[in-house]
Amino acid sequence: MRILIVRNNSNSKAVDASLLLVTYLVTQGIDYVLADSSDLAEEDAPCEAVAASSAGVDMAVVLGGDGTILRTVRQMGATGAPILGINFGRLGFLANSSDDGVV
Image (cartoon, rainbow, N blue to C red; front, side):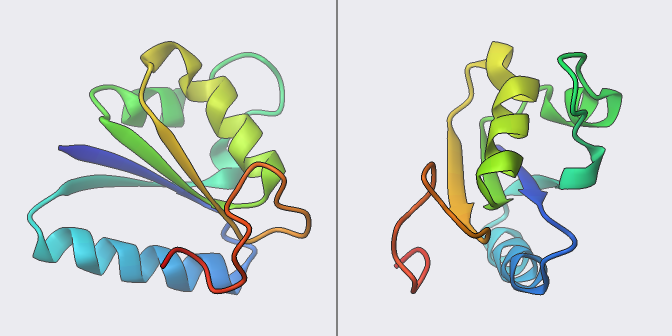
């Protein structure tokens, strides 16, 4: 299994959560790729870094807000891989609604 982790590097809570997730994945022997949300292109053209890292990915975990989730979906839409959004933004319409995060 290979997981793409997209995090909003400008949000310290998202960075901390990504480090915890990476630690867990390593202990479970799960391969991962870490991408910064600033690498995601605003326009419709795919970002080379994310496109390369999303090849062969079984799922993506997005640590950010709705914008980060939407940009990740736009970049990975053709892969068919599931995307789990965890809200570290302000609104969070597309992510979990719990203030405690994923329980």
